[in-house]
Image 1: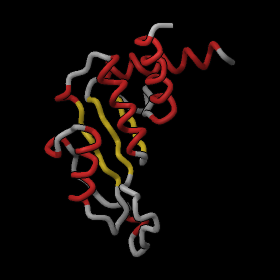
Image 2 (image 1 turned 135 degrees about the horizontal axis):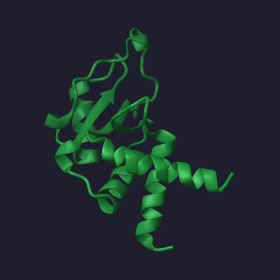
Image 3 (image 1 turned 90 degrees about the vertical axis):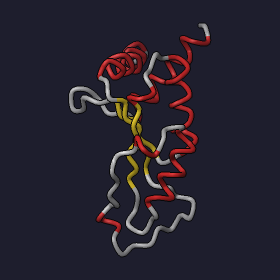
Image 4 (image 1 turned 180 degrees about the horizontal axis):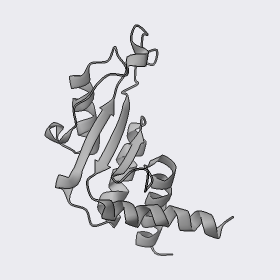
Length: 134
């Protein structure tokens, strides 16, 4: 198996595990709280798929007591997506009055690609791998 095919397969499997699925979502969204996972997914996406950077957006899902501006700056550095391409963020109301226990927790970062064609390309990769191995 060549490197490009392997990279596309890994990206497809990650998406199947942590991404939004069509038809319940018509936007390619990949979310995780682990910065390394977000960075790796975006590396694979940028390297092995033809994407338009302007279609990449980001949504942060923070806890109530977290500084949204600091989180956006943090995730912008991790993703390479400018803060101007971040969607408006609202803290999780369920965490109001509850202190964030993990000091290094930076909320959940959801990468969105505003084009269903990428979703239609990624989702079947992971689904095919699963079907072939069950």
